[in-house]
Image (cartoon, rainbow, N blue to C red; front, side, top):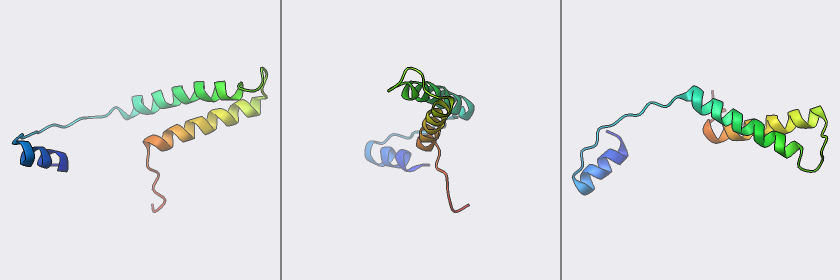
Length: 77
């Protein structure tokens, strides 16, 4: 029983038994799709014709920033 279930049971008498399965592929794929669009728009923010390198850099930064919000990269491993 997780902490939330214990807290709800002790405070309100609820006995909650639930589990969820996350679709990691879909979550990461959606994150990358959003990030590609964000990076593309960011590269075109101050110029109508950014260099290929700028476009790649902005897309890469956007992807890594968004993935870092989803995934905890543990340096200890």
